[in-house]
Amino acid sequence: MNKETIHRLIKDYILNRITRQELIQFLDGFNEEEIQEQYEIVLRSYFDELMASAGESLETEDSKSKAREITRGKLFYGILRVTYMYKLAASVAILLGLFWVGQQWFKEDSGKAALAEVTYKNDFVPKGAKRDVLLKDGTLVKLNSDSKLSYPEEFDKEARNVKLTGEAFFDVERDESRPFTINTSAFDIRVLGTSFNVEVHEAGQKAAVSVKTGKVRISLLQSEEVYELTKNKKLILDLSTGDVTLQDTDVDLALKWTKGILYFNKTPFTEVEKSLERWYNIDIDIKDNSLNNKKLSGQHSNETLEEVLETLAYLLEFKYEIDGDKVTIKKM
Image (cartoon, rainbow, N blue to C red):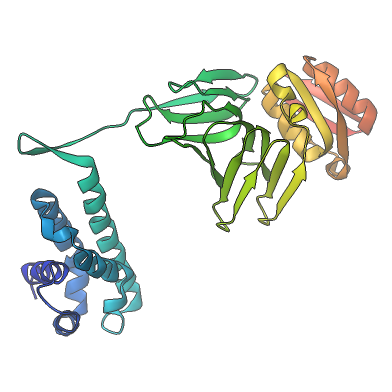
């Protein structure tokens, strides 16, 4: 067995020069350990050749279909061990997938391929701060504390894609020819031109979208369910169970944070704790576990940390200590 033979086999099959049965018979004649040792080197070499040649024959539907069969690994079942089959299928999928994606990105320039680069910017807002970001298309993004927005310096002609971690209010400039998509760890949001609030914290228990104007399309990543929200509608996703709650809402209440107001509406104290940590750039250590079962309603407008803690301590009957950026909450 040698790598040149395997190289030729894979290439011939993709180019429809040999049949499926011939491929199976050919693989069946090789020693598995030798194949496992050489397949990565062979496939990488083949990928380099594909990128260099970029032949038209690789664009036929029949060739693509055969490549998809290889990537699914069905042709190797019963010939090689299942664990090895998946390794081989994954490698072929990566290499062939990169080839066809690469063909879309590469253009001929004096006989040479040139890859168009996209430059991304990352705006990170630390705890205790907020920031407004105006994108090149005219979209305004208000970022809350401990949030990150990634976006290209220039949107392309067909789409406007950004990535969010944390909380932000989007006022999207309408452009029907270029949908605006926000990618998060919980769901993707697609709009044409509307305004809405998004909250998806990495360590959060829930993720939420509240619509102020227009219509929003939400695609859940885990369940692949799709929801459409209109004005004054809210979607809440439980990140631990995947349960979805749809409800009417007063979006202006959800947006009070943009005006420097901390607002709680029957909010579990565990979520209040996280909000205070982000808002004031502190770490809170709760020694009284009974507080975890309590909920809080109210608002605090541009108040100091001490003022907020005094109010909460009175309502929930606890005492606290502040040591720099550390806050300890104990039983009364």
